[in-house]
Image (tube, rainbow, N blue to C red; front, side):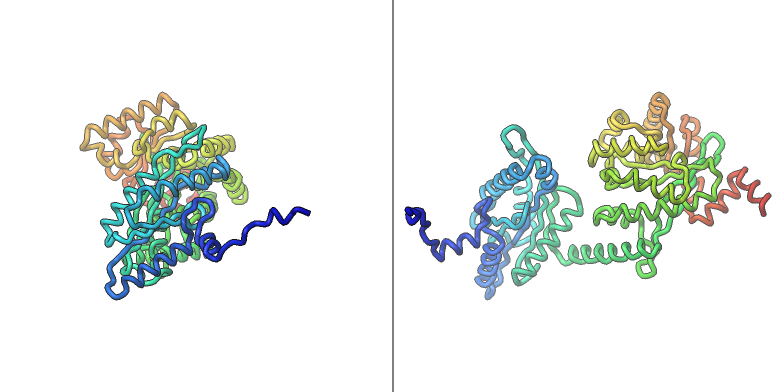
Length: 453
């Protein structure tokens, strides 16, 4: 039949072994090669444990690029990363590829934290240069985690686990970060995981509470609405600041569960308020990237019987810029449903004016950093005056946050700022205390309360 001529030569044992130890896409060694190299190096140095370092390099934002440009482009980037890593690591170092967009390096001559950080910085710089995909250039950053033998682990598994812990911390801190494992970092990660579990349980058991802080009209100090703020008092951990647990919920991917629980609680509490008072509620960056946000929000309001026109959602500039197109779509949908949108922490972002041009808002909240300095710092006063004037021209309402004294409130009123919020008018309080506050500070509500008493 002539088919005998097409028989392939047998693959030798050595070739089979080489294939088993090689990443087929990049030609680098794979995890097995990494394991054997680390074990060999550790055994060589066992008698006189001279340190060496292992590192994991993970590309930030690789998945969206893969989704956007396709797997062929993704593979091309991974091959370019492999090439750059091989070219830039010090002599004697080994580069391998793990899964997906993760690479590992063994650095036999890096003995301590400073050396690892220096190498990490060089790798980070090399990987941040544009990647050529023929018709376009793509930029990526990389996060790195390092572990030094034997301090971070005496065997392969322990050492790699330490490097992964360090990488995880880098990822938590944002893009393009470098972390070298230490006992303190491991402890910090353990605490974060314990906190996460406690918070998940608290949400499920309905133990995260909502407090309300009054927002007043500065012309007559009349209450016009309240901002809902998350509060968590854990039986074991005590009071946990929202500055800690809200970012944790965002980072670990359950902020939507937390937000939706809190919005339902807040909306239920406001049913006892006079109908003209609005509820202000913070929307997270994750929710501004989730196309289901409008549907979920309106479903909660509908189930509680809360008028969407009484709700204001506060968003930060950072949240808006995470995924601008999706955010714009969600903001437009929410506004169509009658919900008002407020730009929070105005003046602290990199290009707040650009946000006002690119997105449609109803209100701007001046950051407390300007308010706290208004009576002592001319620059802050001029900035607030400029913001108020600009918002008048754009037909936007203005709220000043963090008002703590009568002098600050008076100065803001004279500058034309419409609304204010801060300890001077009232600290955040639970639903029952908020009703008592309304009884003391909201004339019509007090009359109705007394008439029905």
